Structure formats: structure tokens, C-alpha cells
Amino acid sequence: MCGIVGYLGKKSVVPVILESLQTLEYRGYDSAGVAFLEQDCLNVYKASGKLNNLRSRLPVELFQKNGHSRHLGIGHTRWATHGAPNDETPHPHVSCDGNIALIHNGIVENFGELREELTRKGHIFHSKTDTECVVHLIEDLAKTETDFLKVLQQVTRRLVGAYALVIIDKRHPDKLYGVRNHAPLVVGIGDDELFLGSDVVALVEHTNQVSYLQNEEIVELSPEGVKVINFNGQPVEPLVEKISTGNLAVDKKGFKHFMLKEIYEQPDVLRNSLSMRLLSPEEPIQLFDEAADAKINEIERVYVVACGTSYNAGLVGRYFIEELVRIPVEVEAAGEFRYRNPLVDEKTLVIGISQSGETADTITALRQCVNKGAKVLAITNREDSTIARESHFVLPVRAGIEVSVCATKSFAAQVTVLYLLGIYLAERRQQSSPELLKSLKVGLQRLPVLVENVLHTSEEIQTLAKKYGNVRDLIFIARGINYPVALEGALKLKEISYIHAEGYSASELKHGPIAMLDPSIPVIAILTDGIVYDKMISNCQEAKARDAQVIAVNSGPMPEDVRDTFEDAVFIPQLEEMLSPILTVIPLQLLAYHIAEYLGKDVDQPRNLAKSVTVE
Ligand code: M6R
Image (cartoon, rainbow, N blue to C red):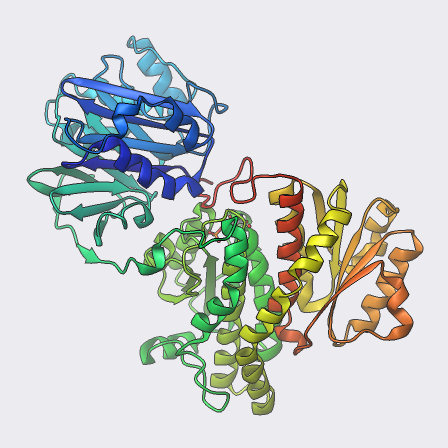
């Protein structure tokens, strides 16, 4: 996690760095810091908490946009891995001699032994962070080597872990250095200015020319240009790409929070995800080129690996793909999958789902599968991400930039792409009847408008949020393809309101959780027309019999005689059960949003979290 930026150019560095950091705050907001050169002085400012705390600590003259000599600097926004967030742990960290300042994203695993060694050599540490040992290590190696690129090469030989580093050294006042090893780092090339950033979103305000550093590369930016070498010291020709900046704009568009804006963007997101893939219900789904088509259709089983919301999307995909394609589909949390030597081979399609494409556990799990010869498909919102780059095939979900830490529209887009993939595979394998596939395609085309209808429940849900917002615990239940939606509803609520919530298969209630029920624990039940509707009603009645207040999210009409089982009910349009998760999840997203808002929580930047989990 952590957002890092570096700037070398003619503008006043502090405003540029702060603007860029603002766009990276989704990567962590436990603390922030900047360092910049001013004549022969290295200035460093840090503050715990959000960027605004840092901003208020900076002298006002630093924000003047012209007329002075601060043109080289670095900035960092942090998600704490080592050391509690306080005034010492923020980056940049500075060497004992005050020459070098460094920022870091990742984890240095052998920092303990390095720290011991460097302490013995007389280095004074000011924090317990893993990062601080790197700046002392650079300082130490620079005592005997004046070529800074060579120093950095030596540093990489000593570090174990994943890291992106950005460094400035007062003795090289027109040079900005970066190192990449399993954590993203992008070079931005503007008019007479150069940037480094952990994500292109930090650069798009300034340039559309970027070069993605690859693993094990070191870069030196200077007025002469961009010089890249690999960890062995061999020169590498940087590949400069022109990116389209439109869909990377970060703007609330009049909504109070990014999360609400992103919930409301879902109809358009679905239209984008379906566009050019589902042309008409009569035509087969198009997802890949001919070569990829042939390879993907050799597969005999599917594994989905993902984390958090993307994992829940994968669970929906499992129900759908198994049902339609009749091949086994397993879904596993990437952080577990990677530690159990999974049985995958060239007949296995491993699908990595990741909004950011930078989730460390998912990246590692997919790499293992590439090494084992499996076919790896990335379903991601970021075509420029590590996961997209390292997979054999990519299906972009096209949700547009998602800023709120709490994922909403990316879930809808991921599930839509999994639906398309399921229908695509079923068509190629001639599994499932053409009538069923056609009716699912008709249903998919109706989705954007149906989602618009569900969004009209927002006010009603706001009322429910006030009624139930003060509870300590809340339970979500569902069955079948909506069971993952119960998990997703609980995850949304936990992460932004800090209310304890659990999602269960309704069938599991009576195997334990029902013991907790009493009037203080509301139960939210998702009921969709289909084979489990009656069973769901029975499960809700069992909960009501234990005095729980049961709230229905019901698709279509509800039989009159069961209406009094429910304390409250939200009605949403009826749709094929297999497609219903895209609709049923929306009231749960809105409920989480309105409860968090009612409780005065920080909706877009919940405590302890970061949007992109780039550490294991
Ligand atoms: O970027 P990814 O989809 O790989 O992220 C996975 C999870 O970290 C993410 O979905 C997380 O659970 C969200 N904050 C949930 O809202």
C-alpha cells in the first residue's frame, strides 16, 4: 500500500506533490510526508493522519506556485505496516548525515537484521519502521561508491521483500531516483518535468506520457531524461506509452462521497462492461481474439482467486459458470490459495479478480499458477496493473476509477464480466440450452435500467439506516447465488460503519448462529424468486420465532400470507435469479452507506484500511 510520488521540474514542488498525493490517498491515509530540496537544504515535513494534517503543517509560502527554487521533491501517503501511526513513522525517512530522503511502498522483510547491522555501524534510527533501514543502508553504501545508480544496485542485493522506492540526495540536486521490485512504480514524462508515482492517477493531471517500470529496475530521472537499468546494471530502453486520461479523473461530481457517486454510476458501468461484448441476444458473446478463444476452450476446470469484494464476486461467478458450463469452479481467497500448493495444470483456467490489479496476495497466487503452466485470466479494472500485465488474458471490467475504499461499482462490473464469461464458455461448449442463454442475454441487457430502478430505493433505505443504525450486530442471510451477496452486504457494513456484521447461508443459521438471535440483532434476508424462495421464507420465520427483527430485500412481489414475518421490506424488480445479485447487492450497498453516514463515519476512507492492499 502507500502512495509515493516524486517530482523533478520547473514548478514549485510542494503544490505538485500534494496534488498528486491527494489522488493517491486511497492507498493509505495513516500519515503523510514530503521532502524537497531548497538550495542546498533538504527540508522534510511529516504528519500523522490524513494529508490535510500535513497540509496544515506546511508554511504557507511553500504553496506559492512560482518564483523560487524548490523543484525536486518526494511525497508519501502511508498505510502503516510497521510502527503505529505517529509523528516518527511517516515517510520520508532521512539518512544520519541529512543528505538522503527516501519514501517506500512495500515491506522489507529482512529489516530486523539490517537494522542491527547498521546500528552496530553507528546509524541512529528514529522509528521502528522497516523503511528506515533502507535509507541508512544507502547512506552506508554511498560512503564507498559515488555513482548513485551503483549504490542502488548494491542496495537491491541486500533487500528481501517487495518494494518501490523513490529517493533524492542533496549531493545530486537535479536527480530523482526510483527502484521497483514487486510494487508498482510509473514514470511520468511531461514538458520539462518528470514524475514518479505508484499509480498513473497521480500523474494524469500533468502528463499522458508514461513508462511503467518493470520488476527489478532502477530509474534515474534528470534534465537529460530517463535512464533505466536492471538490478544487474544493464541498461534498459524505457517503453513510453500514451495513456488515455479521461476515465482516470478523480471527481465527486456533486455527490457528498465517492462511494455514493460510485453506487449511482452502476447503470453506466454495466452498459460499459456489456458494450461490444454482448451485441444482441441472438449473437454469441465476443470476449477474446481467435488465438485466445482456442486456448481458453481447452480448459477442464476453473479456479478463481481474489480477495475481499472481488472474492465475493468470484463466488457469484462460481454458481453461474458451474450451472451453465458444467465444469468445476473453485473460488479461494488468494492469501490462502498461494500457501497450499494448489493442483493446477495447463487444463486449468485460473481467474484472478482484482479491482486494482495490485493486490499482493492475488498477484503472488497468479504468478504461481503461471509457473505451473495454468492459463491465467485477469478480470480487473486496471488494464495497466501488474495483474493485467502478468496474466495470459485480460478482461477489463471498465468500471472507471473507483476511489472509495469500499468497493461497489467494481463488484457489479466484475460480476457482469463473469456472467459474460459463463455464457461465452457455455456457447462454445454447447452446454445449456440456447433458449436459456438467450434469456440470460436479454436479462443482461435489461440490467442497467433495472439497476436505475433499484437506486430509487435510496430514500427508503436511508429511513431504515436511521432505524437500525445504532445496533451492535447485524446478520445478512441468503441462499444460492445470493449467498455471496449476504457476505458482501456484511463486508460493506463492517468496513465503513464498524458495526459487527456476518453473512450466512440461511440454511446454516440453525447450525449455530441462530443461538445469537434476539430482538437486538436485525437479520437482513435476501429473497429472490427461484428454487430457494420458500426455504428462505422458512428460515426467516425461524429467525422471527427467536424474536429477531427480519428485514427483507425481496425481488418481485411477496405472498401476502408471509408479509408479517418481516419488520420491514425493500422491494426490487424481479429478474432471473441467476442475474439477481447485481440488483440485490444495491440495497445492501446503500444501507451500509446510509448507516455510515448517519453514524458520522468517514465513508470514503474508513479507518485502518487502504484501497489497494499491496502488502501480503
Ligand atoms: O483491488 P482488489 O479487488 O484486489 O481488492 C481486494 C480487496 O482488498 C477489496 O475488495 C476490499 O475488500 C474492499 N475494500 C471491499 O470493499
